[in-house]
Each structure stands twice: as structure tokens, then as C-alpha cells.
Length: 98
Image 1: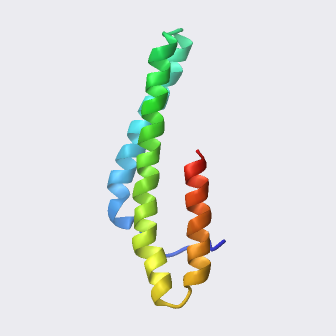
Image 2: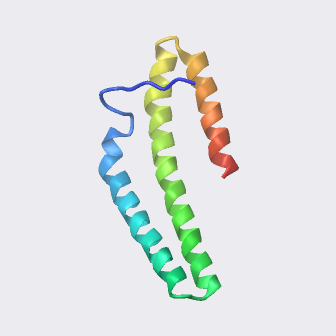
């Protein structure tokens, strides 16, 4: 699998949006901890868990989209497409298993 460090990640334009979403997820997770410790109703906790999952998937989709538009596209243009496409398939397979 290709794992390249680059000066500007392909998601660089979305860093603020990603960080805002991650901070919201962090708050939701803290809320979940509080709900569990307070013995809140199971369905309410599950609803919150569902929200955290959806928010996390959205972050992943933003990064995946930027990766395809940036890293993968650049790789195809520079003749490194086979390895990058193989990497992309592995990442997508891992992502959809969750």
C-alpha cells in the first residue's frame, strides 16, 4: 500500500471543515459517555451513537473524495496509477465493511 507523506494533503482545502466536524464528533462522544454514566434510556444512547457514526462517515467521505480528486488523479497522470488504484480499492473495501 502506498503511504506517502506530502507537503499538502489532498484534503488541505477542507481542513477547517474536517476539524469542525471532528470537534462536533468529540462533543457527541463526550455526550455519549455522560448519557451512559447517567443511565439514560438505551434508545436515546443508540440514537446518539447513530449520529456519531454518520458524522464520522461524512468526515471519511470528504477525505476519500479529496484523495480521489487529488492523490489518485495525480498518480494516474504520472503513470503510477496501478499501485494507487489498488490502494484505493483496499481503502474503499475497508470503509464499506464498517
